Amino acid sequence: MPLTHSQKIMLVIGLAVALAVALVFLGVIPGLQKKSADPHQAKATLTMWGIYDDQNAMNPAFQNFKTIYPNVTINYRQFTDPRDYYSTLLNALASGTGPDVFEIRNTDTAKYVNKLVPAPQTSFTLLQMKQLFPQTVTQDFYYQNNVWGLPVSIDTLALFYNRNLFDQAGLPLPGTWQSWQDFVDTVPKLVKKDAQGNITQAGAAIGGDDTTIPTGSDLLGLLMLQNGSRIGTPGAPSFTGDLGVQALNFYTQFSSPASSDYTWNDSMQNARDLFGQGKVAMLFDYASSIPQIKARNPYLNFEIAPVPQPKNVATPAALPDYWGVVVSRQTKYPTVAWDFVIQTATNSVVENAYVQATQKPPALNSLLYQYQNDPVLSVFAKQALIARSWTEPDKDASRAVFSQMIHAVVSGGARPADALNQAQDGINQIIQRSY
Image (cartoon, rainbow, N blue to C red; front, side):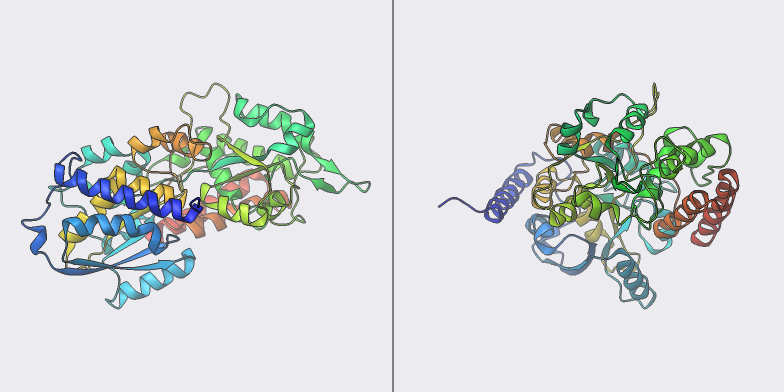
């Protein structure tokens, strides 16, 4: 009897863990030997809180660590909503009942640094971080001369497109495009309207605020990073000025009825829902949204391409959104806890089992290269290598500011330059109260 999909995944995980154990004892995998004086004598119970991943996804890491620390137990708690997660986490840390190990967003290191203990420099160094992970990890989790966290997956904003709609229109696929100009040229060719002029099929979900386009503010931030605005200035992002206006105008032109590129308005439904219904040809989204899209429509024929880049750009950029595993300052076992983080994040065998179980993009350079021909994850594996963040210590609050800026311009309530200035003030206030 052939194995089911779930049985195949469990078999892969089991084989991966067995191989990891063998490599550990043979000393083939560097850095996986004993980290404390005698791991076999260490006794501890660690609590880990994670976002999205269930127990099965984390089991390869737990089983691998058990081979090194046989008397250490790890209790895992899963959260599925980021706001609920952060609220519960902060309350627990405030009362002294927080977890030993937990996850924070890649943009939150400076905000949480006073609640964390850094990696012992005898266990993990900046050089190792640079060798093992793409540059965005160093940018996001190396702060004040210390390593504060390590990821097991790196997600980036990509271009999802409905293959059937492109084929029916006889258009070149996004994977062949050279720049954003190809996107601009393509969008109007995919728009359909009824007799009253209402959009019945959008060329792309772009131009609106986060009310209808969940990743709208992220895409605008990416456009600013790509066009060279000072949004990427470490610690003091600035997106006002001509380049900021250019990015904002480019984004909002797609929701202006007066524009030949008009494809979106605020009366439309949620972009992911419409994409699942086959009523949106292109959607900018993350790998983490793939299960949601497939759940909306298991038969949707969609593919994924890299985000477009400006023409003749010297330094291409993609926008990351991912989580790093960190160690609480309250833990009684900082050395053991950090050993767990290091083992989990740097063991390619364990991480590969995690990728197979979750279908999330990997974080290790070695696996990013390995997955560059994967039919689903290849785009994300490549984009992780060019990913860049900007300072937004409260992701939800920053997105709200950008969403309000988009709405102000689209509704005619503010000129682009004025909306940018107001947004700059809002971002500065978030930074001031977060640091």
